[in-house]
Length: 252
Image 1: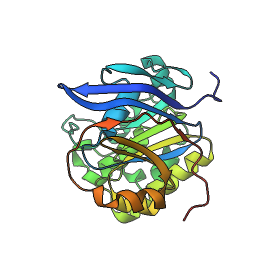
Image 2: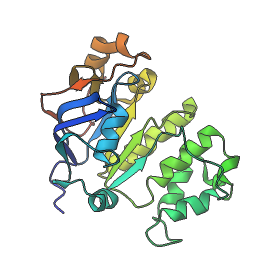
Image 3: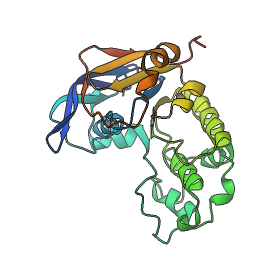
Image 4: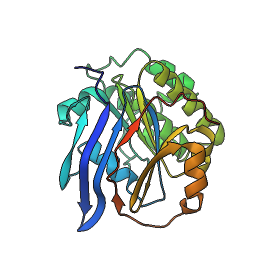
């Protein structure tokens, strides 16, 4: 597969849920090796965008490509690691963290060699033998992050990964993601947390009602800071093409 193509590209992506328009003709592209924060108020369509990219929901129109090819389940499984939101996960299944991680491995018992290193980064190696129903919310979040890295994906998508994490763990997570990005991985970080965006974001894709806006952290926050609240606006209309380069640019 030619990795010179965009890592993710959508063309006129349109999604509705229960008759409500969520995404309307959204066009965007994220370069291979980019580090992008996708931000916006609760209900703005961030998770819907992720699910559409992952092929987890039906779309009404348009298309999604991963490295220049249609986002088939084979293409997604080969290239994307996904860290879902912690909320709603069933934790009563009698399984240890290590067993949960191994279930994600392509060859049983043979995870990517750097999984232990990822646990060390997040100061959570001690969790491996614990049952998942014994984990705190923050501990479970760390496990989900490492699980998303099991197959050494070229693209890592994280949906609200800092929920349940303390401030120190926010920094540990960002250092891990920065390290992966420096190795050429494409990182897509979904968040509505203004504090996280303010501390760590460089390049930002902002979703809000009739706009899909791209820019650096300062310009986005100065224009839309008052909209980072708990309102439930759900329409996103985007006709402008958005292209993200690697986030390692000089801006604040």
